[in-house]
Length: 464
Image 1 (tube, rainbow, N blue to C red):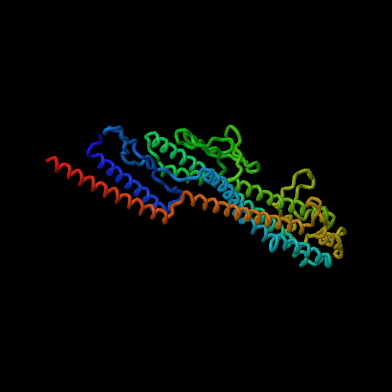
Image 2: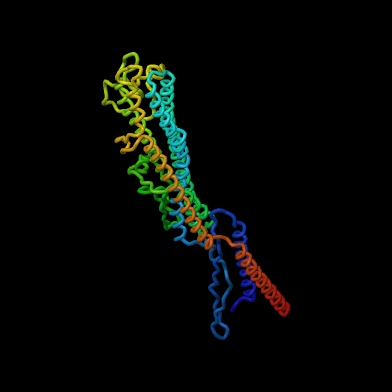
């Protein structure tokens, strides 16, 4: 037969249960603006009940209790969020990096290299009309130096961008290691808490946020272990498991989008790190195009200029610095040291205009001025102007594509976040409704406790 205080126990347990539900609701409201917070709910479980005999066997419920406090999540959406976050990180990194490179190319195409090419060929055209004019020779010298400076300067600015991109890659690798260490530390805390029978929801939210942050840096895959720890893999490498975090390889090969230095190369397919690798590869290709332009100018201009004889009778000279004529097998050096020959920089009057060296002979100068219209085989059968214009068009296309991808991925992330928020996010309206419901339940339980207390007091009064 139940104890006389059985009803008091039920009411008391109900009060505690509804108080816990109010606590959970209050925690949800308090964290409405907390990044990565998942709405929590208290799971109620009825008691096992009591069996007693009162003429016959009767089972009577013995109240309710909170069995657990769980996070509300959709694991499919969480996994989807990791994937789209990596894509967004990659496209944003590439878009930003190429956006910094683009002005270098466009300025060179307009007021830089493009304008310098025009003035260079114009100066030869003017000299062809008056081969002995020292003022026109000075213009050729200055136009040549300006062209060389523009090409060399553009190349070096791209080199600076590569240095910045390399620095960002190193910083990103350090950030990946930091996030991995944080996940490993949270794994240990969560495993310990679960071993004690607790539900460390807040710690799991923190870990999920760290994993999401990591996914924006590099593409990862996760799996939950039986003890509650999360294993994180990066390509062919286990980055985090129940034992802790592994060391992220700090050596890399951007051309292959791989991390090296470990037992096997680690492929990097998306995330900020992949975007920086792609940006570095593209910047290197732009530099290569500056090299091709410089080397083609060296070859084409010098091959014509060597046929001219200056007023001192010297022939076979170079206009742009090039490999020694005695060793033509030596590779040309590209744009990094592209410049006019020192003898011409020191004395513009030494510039030759024709094969005879006569004051009226401007045949070579005329050929050089007409070089602007010649399709160069080493430049894919394009003129110098067309080639560099195509370089500018290519960077514009690359930037537009990267920006479009970043915009698309941003929209996808926002869509997935909206779906996650509709399930895991805190709605103040819903929580206020729950609070009112739990408050009414608490008041009813308190009223019930008061009634049982009064009944018990009356019963004890009768016994006395």
